[in-house]
Image 1: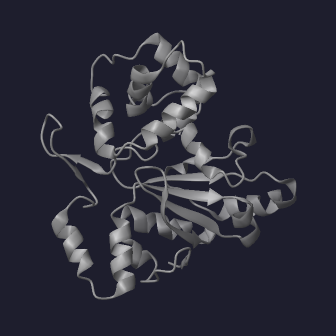
Image 2 (image 1 turned 135 degrees about the vertical axis):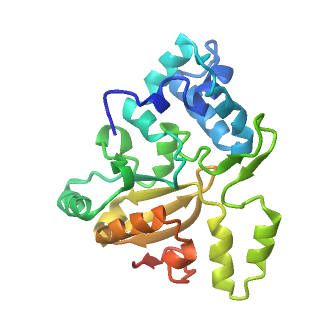
Length: 264
């Protein structure tokens, strides 16, 4: 993934949040630029995917209607690499590795973890100047507000008036089917799987000390819908399972203990 050149699908005007900024940014705001940016990010995060669709729909305009002012704002608050990583993934769940601990006493152990690990598409956020977030990992969304965007939506008609979640989140028949699963653990895992839009591989201090990467399954609002752990050496097998659309129940072998270890 390039750090110097924008991918075509990450050009200014190609991401849904670009148009949210275009519509809501106030040059005369009493807030400073960072404060206003973060407020708009969290407002955007509170929108459902269906509510965000109107902004996604505008990304299809040729030429895009993005203004120089909006481009300036976006350049100020996002790197090229972050925009490239924000491209909606249409082939599977979005995955990103995020390191939030840069303490010198665990640097060698982190290096060993990183050597063993595998991340789909090499989508790695590892920079102490931007991501030394400690336990406040969710601030990464302030730089990449679209990380949970649009993979999960299927447009059922041309004008976007009929939108469906690919996961079946809004499908009453699928939900009813899962609700009838007798085993409570299997039922919980099946229903939880409907919520997932992105998978964050979090490496904070605890993860480095235990040698286990935290898996945060994020919903459309950027909140943790479920969590697991995985050994770095197992991440290659995990990547293959994700590309094969393996369910959460299959990944955990039916273990519905939140935070349990995935052993493939």
